[in-house]
Each structure stands twice: as C-alpha cells, then as structure tokens.
Length: 158
Image 1 (cartoon, rainbow, N blue to C red):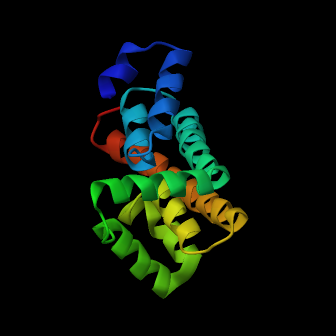
Image 2: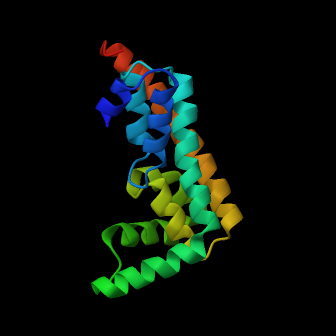
C-alpha cells in the first residue's frame, strides 16, 4: 500500500489514499499515518482519509437492507451461524455504552465500517448511526493526524 502512495504523484497520491481509506478493511489508523509518512500534507491527508472512510459508512447506511440480505445468504451458504469475535465484542460495547460508545470505540475494536453495520443491525436509525460515526471518525482522524505529525516528527521520519 505504501508503495502505491509513493509511486503516485500529485493529485494521484490523494486519489490512492482516498481509495485506500474507502476500502472496508482499512481505517484512518493506517491510512492517515501512511499518507503523512509519505510526505503528503497532513491536513489534506486527514480530509482525504476522513472522506474515503465516511463514504463507506454512507454507502452502508444507504444500502443496509441489500447488504444485510446478501451477507445472510453468504453466511448461510458457508454454514456460519455463530457471531464472530468482532460481533461479540461490538455487542458487549453496545450493551454497555449504546451507539455513542460503539461509535467512539469503533476504530479501536472493530473498525468504523463494521461498527456502522453492526449498529444498524442492532436496530439504530440510519441517521443516528451516520451522525455518530461521522463524529467518531472526525475525532479519530484528527487524533491520528496530530499523533502522526508530532510522533513521526519527533522520530525524524518526516
């Protein structure tokens, strides 16, 4: 992934970063530090990382019903009946702290896109899930950008 960012030039670096952030398995925990280490503008990296990750949350919110039916068919076809470890962990956070807790802890425990999907599965409204995930994603993006700039700067990596 890092090579993709380094091999790109100009606006293409940000497009690659956006696409990486939009990928379901990548979060701002990885994308923002990668962009900053690659020498890209920290503010632009943060905005691009947020936008890519938030796009995935919006798409999950809009297409939740279609995604859920596809996922259930896939799980039945594979014979999966028990919840995964991530789902169990997210359910524990949900039961204890509700949607705000799940949204704020999501990047650490399961990832924002999976947490959004689980929150919708647990019965939250699309609007509230998208709002809370946006707040959480913004806070974590800012924290990762600041931590990366000052941390990597301290280690003389940027």
